[in-house]
Each structure stands twice: as C-alpha cells, then as structure tokens.
Image (tube, one colour):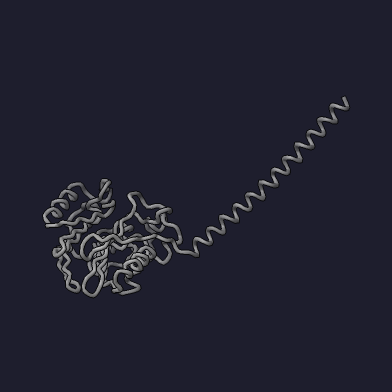
Length: 267
C-alpha cells in the first residue's frame, strides 16, 4: 500500500513539474511573440507602405494606375481604385488622387520618371474617400487646384476619420489630411490647361453618390467615369440612385470616346 502511495506521489510530482515547466515555456513563448509583434508594429509605423505603383499608358498622354479588383484592406492599403495622370504641355492633371497621401506621393514619383512636371490640377469624381484622400499631397507639394463635387466639402471636415483612416495600415495612411475642394462645378464646365481641354460634366442628381461627375478629353477621346461605371464588378448605389445611374450612362454614351477608364476594375 505504501509502495502504491509512493508511486502515486512520485507521478503527481512529475506531472506537477511538467505542468510548471510547460507553463513557464508558454509564458516565455508568449512574451517573445508579443515582443515580435511590438517590433513589427514599430517597424511598420516607422516605414512607409510600398504601393508598388506602375503606370499603364492608355492613350497618347494619359497614364493610369489600376488597382486590384477587391475591397480596401490593410493588405492592399486602398490600392483597389483607378487613378490617372493626363500630361499637358507643361504640367500634369490628375483624375482621382487615390486613398492616401502616401499613395499620391508614390504615384507622382512613378510619373516623374516619365516627365518631371508639376501637377497643376486634381479632379475628384465623387466623394468616396478612396478616390480623393490623396488630394492633400498635391496641395502640399504644388498648391494644385482641386476640382470636385460640393459633397466633399459638405460631408467631410478636417477632423473627420473616414473609412480609409479606419481600414488602412498606419504606414499607408500617415500624412493624409482632409482638405476642401477649391472649385465645385454644378453644371458642365470646359477648361483648358496647358493646351489640353477637359470637359467636366456633373450628373445633376444622385447617381453612384449624391454628386458625381465624369471627365472627357475631346482631343484624345478619353472618358474617365469615376465610379459611375466599374469593370468586372457592379457599381454600388448605397449612396445614390438607379435612376441617376441610368441618366449618367446615357450622358457618358453621348460622348465620342474610344478609351473608357472606369473607377474600379482592370482594363
């Protein structure tokens, strides 16, 4: 009986020692994992997200950055939108600046390899923030004129935290600011910038959003639809109207375009 009790006691001691050892090892591993996570977080915050942007030439003087056909996430940092550069005689004009300051900065760095020109104007097609949060980069660097719907000024103020601020990683959204639009066309507007004509056409009623506009280059027959049209997916109407969308499609079809750049989706 004593022998059995002694064996049981020995086994209990072994089990207890094993559990203590396992607990100690687990604690050490957890501590190391937390330290690794902290180091990664610190490293990510000190570095800058690399969007790996590559411009695609879509016409004689138009290049676009085509985002992934998916929603915004920490992995893509909002690179799921289409943004474009139009090269004029002495400058660039940007159509939709993208989801963050860092995105816009890297887009300009990529375009500077094609031509070292200032960005004279930025045209925002609607108020969804994945299309215009890059505006602050161009305003800071070039004091670019920002053209877009009044809805941006009405719906957002500098202190707001928009969807991109919540979704994008810190090293992608850093430096991003909400700035107001300078010119808010409420009817069709033709402007010429350094020899290139831009026809800016507001829809005049809810379509994809409360206020949308599209941009047409008559010389090159290029149309930028913003999110009034998407390639490979159906455009959302959560902020708009199907009736307005149908009107917008009719208005865009009336233009003599040969190149059509949608707000999302690959070519």
